[in-house]
Length: 169
Image 1 (cartoon, rainbow, N blue to C red):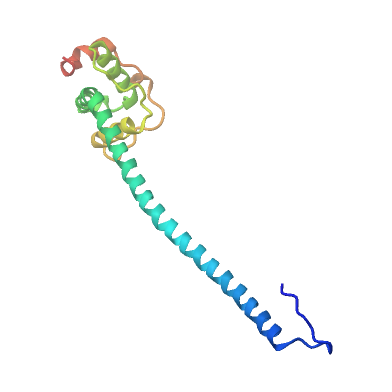
Image 2 (image 1 turned 180 degrees about the vertical axis):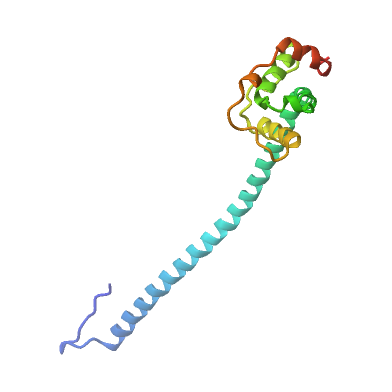
């Protein structure tokens, strides 16, 4: 703060009073200019970050598409086999009691026996989406949840292979 010089009678000179007001207003103005500069800086930073965010989103989507394409390229033969066998297997009304995962276990073994690479994980996003789409196409909105009857728990692998190896040859 500005120290004021007082006259002998205790009053402040007019010049000192004007200087004091000037410095106070100058300080106020400086604070407001600094606040304005900060606000403009925040705005500019948000505009720049928005651009980088858009670029990042595009890159992430591009990477997702590339990963999906790579997955499909690697496992397309096995997924086609799975779709064909599931469609034929469930075309028979008597096979509707078997759980899709049980049938997929046999399809996986069949693919491995004939050197067709089957997805290692069946909990992955891509496999789950594809399997759910195939099963929904077969069963519609009907659910296959709940306990499996004892007669539908086991599938004879030898008979299964004889019947469906035409899809893997």
